[in-house]
Image (cartoon, rainbow, N blue to C red; front, side, top):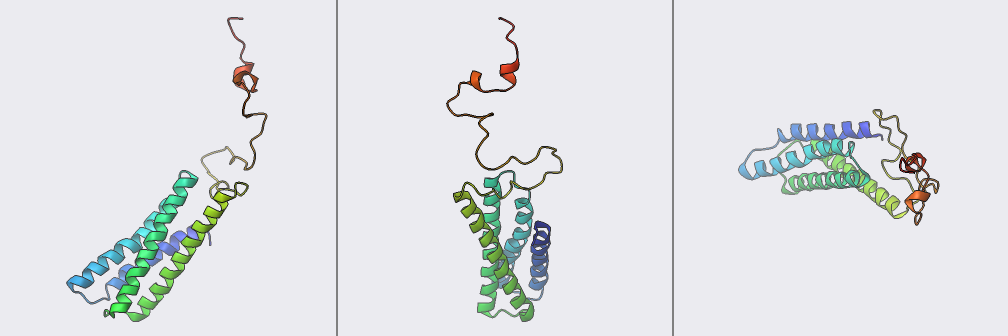
Length: 171
């Protein structure tokens, strides 16, 4: 599943939860549960859109963790509605329970994969292969730095580059 398909899926989940909530009985306690479920389910979609625009690998991972937490919270509220046997469209409730569970599984697995790649420095970062259409600069290669451009312990004057090619006007 690519990121656009997952954006569509999280948004569709939020829309279905919204419509589902209109089928529930109304009372003060049920309204509290409904509001919590509406907030968490719509937050999945909104925050996943933000994940797709993460500015760094750390930002990407942190936002993805938020999405996972919101998906898990939505699953909790749906289970709570089911356990309390609140009057609602039960067919839709069971669909939403299944979908919330799948979303939690998807986001949790993604987080585990990213963390395992972080612990293995030779693997690619989650955003290293993403293409930025506004930039003509290719993504940097992964692996060891090129000693021609970087060498720990070398004096700045020994590192080749633009400054070493500029003549000193005082000499």
